Image (cartoon, rainbow, N blue to C red; front, top):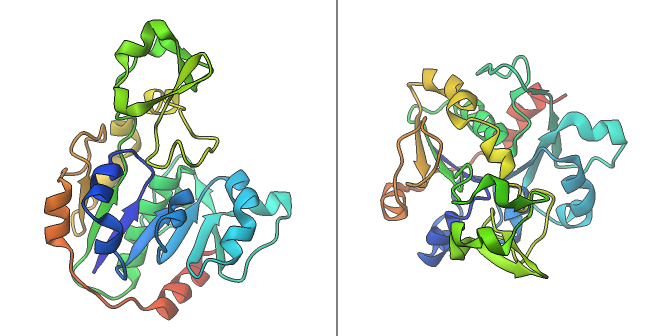
Length: 256
């Protein structure tokens, strides 16, 4: 079985130009945050309480299974019928999620969830594709970043022109494939990637040998998984049956 995890990185734009949304339609997908605006994932994940609160009415209409950070209960928000809340452990990865889902970063949260689901769905062949997991695939000078969102005129020549838009007197760095159309609290926050070493954060996954994990982003800064391009990714895709009832039963056992 294959699970496709869709992060928000700008490298996905290459796949979109090659017909990504059509090619993954009806496959087992885990979308993160605002990705649901572009396709309907099997599961939509979120780790940000503000995202859930802001998008509640849109999520209410979504047929996908919703899996999120249990911290939304702290704010006593409405829990939708299709919502499963899982505890988070920011310091330790346990494959069986017995101590919570590793990291409250949505992409990593989703990867840990994908591994757990494959372990419990009773399938022999296991494969995960990570899309948009670039981890700061942007060239810029750190000291030119203003308020974590924009760069000055003086430093603009250090940023890939494809990854900037002019905003007022400055420029905003585009970090996600939907930036420019959807604004969110993570937009332009390049320091986030600089201060979190991907080699360290993703290191626990090196122990996983029985699941093939591909990073569909050749320029990604994450060194842990083999990288492939979109044509190669598309050539590897195959249809598989998705047992929604079984997925819900698995989630029911681990939810907070």
